[in-house]
Length: 419
Ligand code: LLP
Image (cartoon, rainbow, N blue to C red; front, side, top):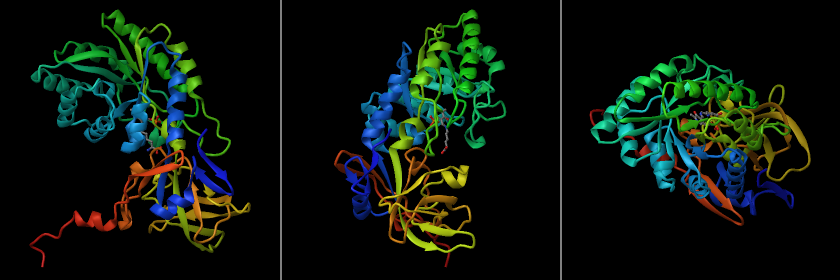
C-alpha cells in the first residue's frame, strides 16, 4: 500500500498535489511519500519481528537520500552500506555506527580503516584476503573487527541476471563448500571477531523458495561451524524481497518472509539481520515527468517525456517495467511508446503499451521509482541531475536540489596548455 492516489481528478502524494510540486520545483522530479516509507518500514519490521532477535538494516544503495535515510533512522533502522560514501550518509542521517554493516566486494583499505574508526557493528567479508587485511588494520589500531563471512550458497534466485548474486559464478561471497575451513582460518586471526555468516542471493525476488533453500544451506553450515567450536552469534540473511511493479503483481509479504525465516532458523539461537532495500523504498516514490511532444511513429506514437534514461536507468538497464500514469487522467487510454530525450534508442520507458492518454504539456508519473531511481541518475547528455522531494501530509521539502548542467560543468576545466 502506498500514499499516491487520485483525488478530484488528479494525483496526489499524501495531501500534496503532484501538479503543485511540478509547478514549483519543475520536472523531472522524484517525489517520495514519508508515510509510505514509514509504513513499509513498520510492515517489514513487524513481518520479520516473529523472529526472536532481529535487526533491520536498510540497504542504502536503494535510496541514499539523506531525508529518506532520516525517516528510516527514526524507524529504528540501521544501514547496510557498500562504500565509505554510504557510511558517511548513514551516520549523517542519524543511524548509529553499531547498527551499520559494511557489505561489498571491493572495500578498499582506506574504507575498512574509516569504518573501524567509526566503530561500525559488522563487516561482511567477501573473501579471505579481505579478512586478512581487515584483521591487520584492526590490530594496528588495537581493535577487534566484528565480522561475518559472506557465503555464496549457489542457488538460482530466479530474478534478472544483472541483479542475481547467489549463483556460484557471481562475484559475491565465498563458495559455501570452502566456508568452513576459511572461517576457521579467519577466526584464528587476532584483530577479527568472527561472529557468523551472511548471504544475499539477489534482488526483486518474487518467490521465497530460493531464499528458503539458501537459508537452509546456511543452517547446515552454522551447525558445522559450531561443531568446530566456533561461537556463532549472528546471521545476516540479506535483502531481496520483490515489489509489485505491474498492477496485479503478487509478491511475498514481509510476514510470509518472517514466517519462513522463523521456521528455518528456529534452532539457530542467533541474532538475525535483514538488509531490505527495494521493499522499503520502491513503492514510496514516483518520478514525475512532463510530456514534451507526442510524435507519430511508424507503428505507434512516441510520447516524448522530459525524464530520460539518465534520470531513471532501470528500463534501459534491465528492461524494467515502470507503470506510467497521467497526473490528470482523461479516462481514455492510448497505445504507444514512451521515450526520453536522450540520443539513444534504448532511452525508452515503455514500448507498445496501453496507458493513460496524454498530450504535450501533461504531467505523468513513473511508479515504483523510489528504489534504484534517483541514486542511479547521471548527467548523461549534459542533462541536470534530477531533484528529489519528500512529502509528509500537506507539506513537502526539496530533499535534493536539481544540480544544473552548468554546475556540473563548473567542476571541469580546460588544461592551461591548450590554446
Ligand atoms: N544486501 C546486499 C548485499 C545487496 O547487494 C543488495 C542489493 C541488498 C541487500 C538490497 O536488496 P533489495 O532488498 O533492494 O532487493 N539496481 C538494481 C538492484 C541492485 C541490487 C543490488 N544489491 C535494480 O534497479 O533493480
